[in-house]
Length: 286
Image 1 (cartoon, rainbow, N blue to C red):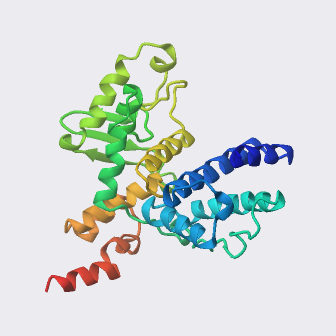
Image 2 (cartoon, rainbow, N blue to C red; image 1 turned 90 degrees about the vertical axis):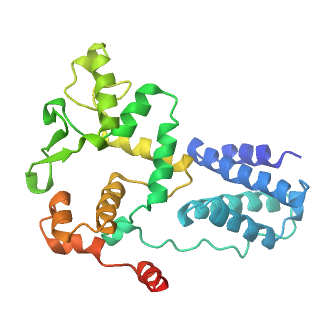
Image 3 (cartoon, rainbow, N blue to C red; image 1 turned 120 degrees about the vertical axis):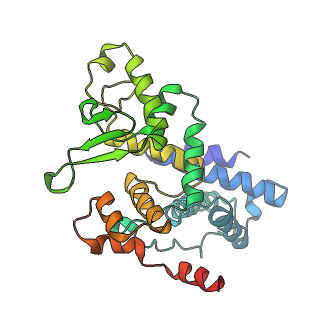
């Protein structure tokens, strides 16, 4: 019996929207593949609560899925097994005592942003480097929201930031040794001849428009974060990671404050104060 297709047909008949059906298809399909590989058979009617718990552990510890993603899987499986129970296929629903776990507030909601480790930064960038589309690869390796007039290229690259906090602007310098990706993109960008590109004042464009939108940037980040099996990635996490890298390299707090364009040094202090983990690591070195 093709349980998955029968389930999807039932969802369709129940009037579920296409996005929900697709999400359930992915979650249940993933479980069925794992179940067969784990048990060596396809008799889903023999599923036990321990099977569900082991699958959820697999999502968390092997695939490194977030609790929010795992909760979506739990919701899909609850609906799936309720369908099977209603059809008389399973006698004891293994999802009865499986609860959706509370998701802790995200860093954004707490007013802080988790920094990426050096390993996470490298892993994320490695997947951008694997992008086969040259347009996207060169752009995505260099991407920030700028206009061509905001850039002055000499030995280094001076970048005018016109939309900082409270309407302020500043000039930041990107040293030559760190500007390889940006230079490669600029060279490629200026070689594009379509009017949609040549008429655009923006440094970063999309394949279909003259400006790479905020939403487009986030979708790009989501793509590579998923490939790298990482959590939710935002531009702010990279900004905070940059500041933390400076702190870890021994850069003084006032220098970090100026580079980060912080008005208050108290904002910068979050990168200087060692975490509990860092304190333990320091003690291990004694």
